[in-house]
Length: 106
View 1 (tube, rainbow, N blue to C red):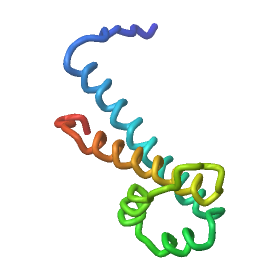
View 2 (view 1 turned 135 degrees about the vertical axis):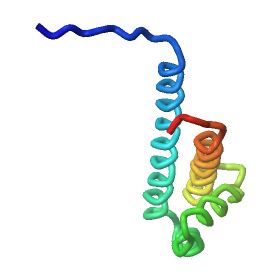
View 3 (view 1 turned 180 degrees about the vertical axis):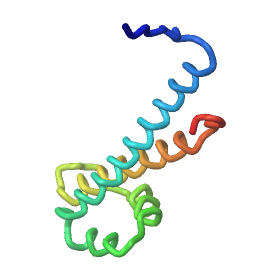
C-alpha cells in the first residue's frame, strides 16, 4: 500500500510555488499580447501595416505603444491604432512585472 504524506500549504516552498505561478502567468499573457499585435497587423490599414511590418518585436512594441489614435474610434484605422497601443502597453506592463524582483523563483 502506498502512503502519501500531505506537506501542507505553508512555508517557503509554497510561497515560491505561488510566486512562480504568478510569473509564469504574466509571461504567457505577454506572449499572447505580442501574438495579438501581430494578428491585428494582418488586417491593419496598408499605411500602418507598412510602417510596422519590418520592426523587430521590441521596436514594434515601442512603436505601437507610442501610436496616437484619433479621438473617434469609428474609423477602422483609429480603432486599430487604439487597440495596438493598448496591447503594446499591456505587453510593457507584463514585461516589467515578469522581470521584476523574482529572486529564487526560477
